[in-house]
Image (cartoon, rainbow over all chains, first blue to last red; front, side, top):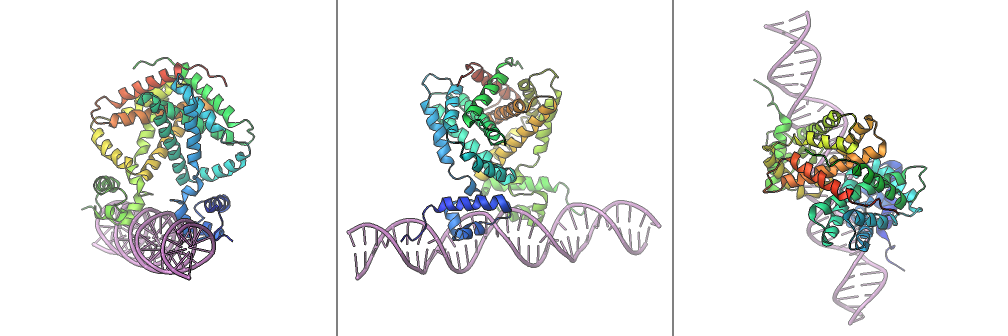
Length: 194
Length: 194
DNA sequence: AGGTTGATGTCAGTGACAGACATCAGCCGT
DNA sequence: ACGGCTGATGTCTGTCACTGACATCAACCT
């Protein structure tokens, strides 16, 4: 007989999402989440540094997806093309079965500013990681930063569309289209003298 | 004789920045900030919803600067050109005398993740506001969102450069150059078929 | 059998915030 | 001149997020 049920963080995450979705984020205490799976508040905070973090854990998987995408790009690809590869790679992570879960999760986030802050910050960190990876490929600092941030703009926008009700295309397809739109939007512009 | 010194929020902000810069953000309690200007913790939280907010108050001015920049753009300007106008308008807010203050403020933020979250979120809100303003000009949702987010990418990147030590160019000039760089970065790319 | 380990529980404490209520200088109408 | 109103502040009290220190105890190792 095992002393503790395995997968404690996962059980906490499921319980938390459920409670957040029904009672609301602020109306749910960390103690309630923990107790709902037979644990104590202290244990909750041993697994998650933060009450918010219970909704954001697992981001490292996404990060790896982005980074392997960057590394899988051909050596002579332009920064933006590399980012396009990273987007495709990361999009694969969000399969169709994942959509309902992502939807409820996002609806919780959308209803709470504190969670939105965490989300923006995670996207920012992702951009920083990608920029680092681009730099490692020899891209200059400024280009790397801009390309990475632009990639996150596309990803964030595409994700919002993917979550939208009625939407059925894959995230990869949407991201592709959003990127194309961005290129068109920017491409048409004159070099803008001061 | 006046009952209370005027400019309470400003005094609190100055005191907070000073304390954050010397002792560090986490090591400074809201009570300490308040007491350092002869007030109580409760009063502090009447002026700022948050301990962090004491560093971010006044963002509405920046927002207005961006929005008037958007509105000042010629009617036939492309979304990106409109954003370029907004950037120029907002950059005017950051005069050269402001730089030292911005530097110490940013150094505090850079040392604390919680503050970085707030900052990312504020930039995101700014993007949303600009997108709304673009929509009001008749730009479609997707283009508005992308243009606005791209604008914030440029602004954030330019701001970081402006803050950098040794840097002497105006924020407007830097933003212009960063935008040019981004256009070049994106412009060269092929339409990227799937 | 006995020591070790690692996830958990218990307890106590700090600090961020919020509601309810009291205070009281200055202003305003009479 | 007097009394009530106002609005920024203080006081008091409570909740909850989070943390350090220490105890527990099944499984595992030797």
